[in-house]
Amino acid sequence: MSVTSKVGTSGGVAERLGRGLQSPVVRFDSGRRLQMTLRSGPALPTLRPFRGLRVGTLPIVALLALGVIGETQLSAFAVGSPVRHSPVASLAIAPKSVAPVVPQPDSSLAALTKRLTPLWSAVSTGHLAVANGLFYPETAYVALKVGRISQPQTDWLHRLWAYYELDLSAYQHFVGAGSSFKLLRVAPGAVSYIARGVCENNSGYWHLANLRLVFSGKNGLRSFAVASLISWNGEWFIVHLGPNPRSAHGGQVALPGTGTTPAGPVGGC
Image 1 (tube, one colour):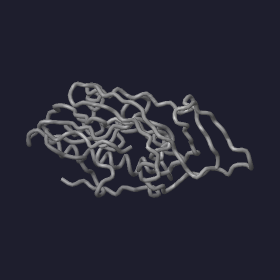
Image 2 (tube, one colour):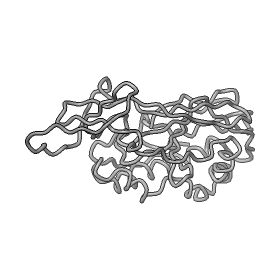
Image 3 (cartoon, helix red, strand yellow):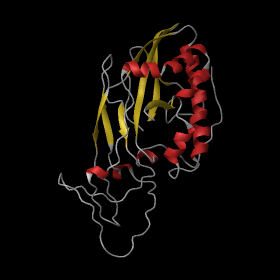
Image 4 (cartoon, one colour):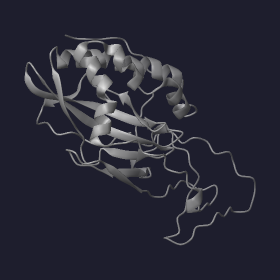
């Protein structure tokens, strides 16, 4: 079964690390108390968004998560490094002024299994609309991307949502009738924090990459991945069900495999 459709894109949108980054120069003083200082002189030019930065020049700002496949819950901790560009001002930001990390949604296996129950119900019964409420809302996506990408409403509708509908059909075909859910697998480090300004985003959020649903069907024990979930209002939402990026238009299953296939890889945003 092959499912295809024309899917539009908006202005070269790409959710890759570092595109659209805008930040003043930040200087960290080796563990000493940090103070904000501005150089005196003529009025500073207006800061404009940086576009097309090379990966090698990007800051590393992430939260790494620890997780264990099985009944163990996932936990996370924060790490970060300064951002540097050609200076128009010299700033040192005190810790209390740093944007707070948003609360992490419950990332235990039990909570994630419950959260993804509508997805399994949709692909195992063919009632695909049951999984619509799991998808990242349009209003949240527009708020996340406005001013960072061109036409975020169009990008949500004609790229993200269009692929989600096509992917649901592909997953239904892969699972097949009469299949039963067995367990959920999450790789160590699958949960990470994406800071504001990274991946063309206006605010920080949590990201969960390539968790795996294992099921038993007519072809034995098999599994598939959910490519990308991100947090909003303390809940996990699917933003990419199938692979991102993908090799071709049309619905695709992310990392299909047998029941012994491990979860992961981790990363992305």
